[in-house]
Image 1 (tube, rainbow, N blue to C red):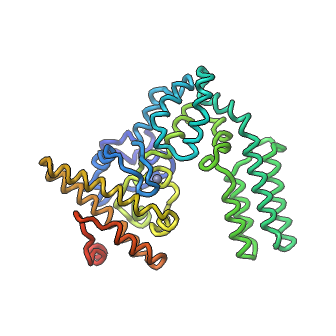
Image 2: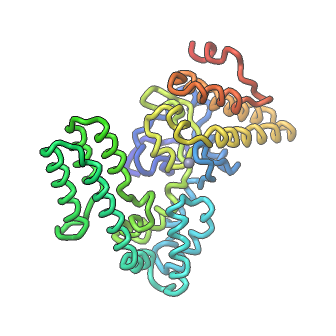
Image 3: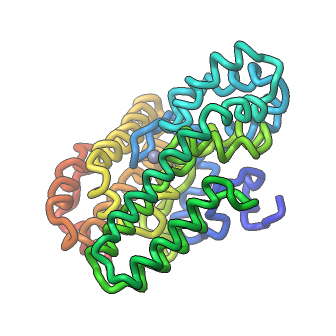
Length: 356
Ligand SMILES: [Zn+2]
């Protein structure tokens, strides 16, 4: 591995495949619960505390391309992927349903060739949704001053030329969003600003659109395509309080939710996802159940350690919620109710104890 950030027992495993290589794992928490200890928790089939979906240990995701299953016949690749189907995110799951019959029909082509084959069929539906969105943007700018409206139309016209291939390079969503957001920040009408911003975000991506996925990955290697089918379901360690605010306490969370949250406070994540406190409760309950099991089977020390860990993550969430409760007081009340467990009741003055 090129980066030397992770020299512990599982140093060969990249816990942050996409964006988080610089994240810190130091401090008292990491000493008490080192990564190899946390990694054992994945054997409990924990659901992601955010979306509630089951997660795949990252080394299982990495093992497949390493074993070469994605490199040859697509039928082998699809069969290998199928065992993880229930873990997949919606777009990846839908892709699976599309590629299975084709893999049976053309078992000898590779995964990339299969996606290229599909691209002939899916390109027009992607273009149609992109053009529809550009049209909506144009309409949303109706109340702008003449000068601002002209500028918006110029951005839309350029985007359209890329989408319809009047230019030699591919349309890039990221570049389009940069251009349009830079433009939006310059206009003077806050209502139109938020309208345009929300619309621009709807430009299809491979994360939310099957046709965008197909058009993006037709240019990628079979190994990349196979890995991407599972990657967002991989378990990653997430700092409950962001690393940038010196948070130490980590919980397993799927790659997708980890990416989406970035440095946003927990309260805004919960308000966007009303199921989250229930999912978190399920996650913690599994830890508690295992702790009870260990205790009943003579593993007193590990039982206590697991319960302490469960309490540490629960209290870290409560602290974060308490800190931002002015954003949503109802979330705090709900959290105090849903994150109460008889094995680890919420201490009346937990905030005082922990914030000292
Ligand atoms: Zn998730």
